[in-house]
Structure formats: structure tokens, C-alpha cells
Length: 139
Image (tube, rainbow, N blue to C red):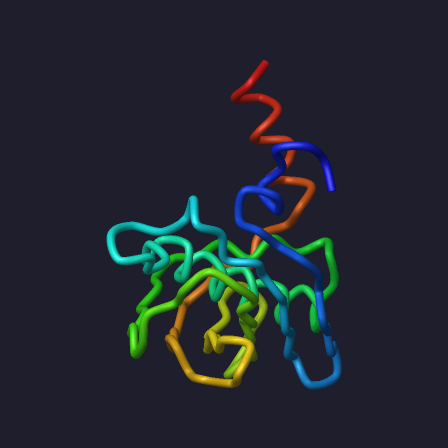
């Protein structure tokens, strides 16, 4: 992982699994004290980002890395506080078409306690077009 990459900032430890046949993924993160607000609770944006990434990885596992899943809508329900330590974000495909997908996900701590759930609608974009548009915007 590159220094100061998104993976590092988010605290990704490893991709536990990417099952293309089932359209599922599991990512392990290390929640850090720097990601917490008062009371040692991880800020909700990190929790949302972890699950969002797992849902995107489920789509990439199923459809291939030529697809860039772009979140159009994201709903997260926070069920228990996430605290520093290992957390596991899972994502799975509910339904995927040619241009859109519906996915769900969850976040659990190292002991298996359910911390948050999510559902999302994603647009499936062509990686080449997304990267070309980014290059044009930068340069």
C-alpha cells in the first residue's frame, strides 16, 4: 500500500475475501484512536466508508476490476459504537444490472458484535472512462 493512500488513511489491514461467484466481500480494518471523537468512539464517516468499500469490493469481485462502483445513495444504521481495534466490513450484492446495482453491508467488531448495517445504490461506471475524466480534470 502506498504511503498516505486511502487504504492507509482508512486503516485497511487486509482484504479477507472477495467471492465473485457469491458477490460478497470482507475487509478487515484497524480502527485507530485518531479516527475517534469524544468517548473513544469511531467517527461515523469512517464506519460508513468501511462498509461502502466492502460493498464496492463485492461488486468488483463479481463484475471485474474494469468496473468502478460509484455510490449514488448510501443509508447507514449505527447499532453500537465502533471502538479502536479490529473491525470487519462485509458487503454483498442484492441485485446488479448493466448500469446499476443494489448492495448491502455490515460492520462487526473482532468479537462478532454487529456495529452497523448499510444499503446502497451504485452506478456501474467503466474504469477507463472514469480514469480518463479524472486525468482531464487534473491536467
